[in-house]
Amino acid sequence: MTLRLGVDLGGTNARAAVVERATGRIVGSARETWTDRTPEAVIAGTAKLVTALAKEHQVGPGPVGVGFAGMLRGPVVVNAPNLGWRDVDFGGPLSAALGRDVTLVNDLSAAAWGEYSAGCAKGARDTFTVFVGTGVGSAIISNGALLSGASHVAAEFGHIKLVVESGRLCGCGQRGCLEAYVGGAKLAQWMKEEKIEGTAVDLETLAGRVEEKKAKTLYDYATSNLALAIANQVTVLNPAVLVLGGGVLSRCPGMVQRIRDTVAARSTVASSSALRIELASLGDDSGLVGAALLT
Ligand SMILES: [Zn+2]
Image (tube, rainbow, N blue to C red):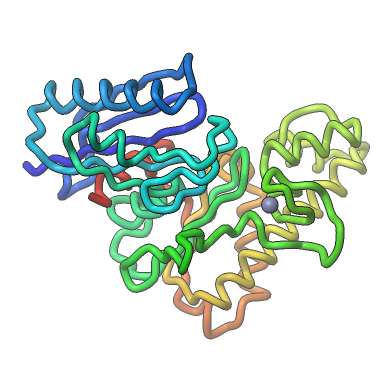
């Protein structure tokens, strides 16, 4: 049994796992919660977690895949808002601390790879993955390879613009981004401004009530724009599988249905004729499994 090591590293904690290469099955896992978010502490904590797990499961020498919630350029973290990092060399020092090569990828790329290798998109060569949770993330797998782009920041789907000028402010610093309307954190903020009580996940239920006119307006705006943007991407990419996931989408069946209907109606017939639309089947583990299997 060949084993691989993977890490899913976020702003509040890291999960590490030993994964069976052939099946994507998680053989063992462990978690570390950050009390100190400095790069030194996170590197030391991650190295300790992986080293203990590798020893416990007798994983031989070999690389570690890390899915990271942030914008990356090779081993360098360009921007990680959740950790408050900018321009941090993370991959180099982590590799030195572990005595193993480190493959560092964006968390959505890891999740897309997990679903492609061992989840709902297994067997496909071309996939488009969209996760809507706190933010909006995506990844593109084209002919069996992750699309990275000239500066390694391809597929930043959450930051395509919905409006020509102005628009709501996004976490990236620009205005009018899809994420500024649909991402769970920004949607909750918008709801608060409109005096609608609840979280982004509650909005779908609220929008179904006759008396909640404002909730319906926000929900329709967010959902129809998300669905149309995805339908347009299907036209551009011609994927075999559209993978949908994340904390908001996985809990909002109405949103998923709207995406299905809009893709059917608005993508070109040629681009969507062979398309399957699937919910991510590995749940919270897609990024963890994908990071391990990317090595
Ligand atoms: Zn943005």
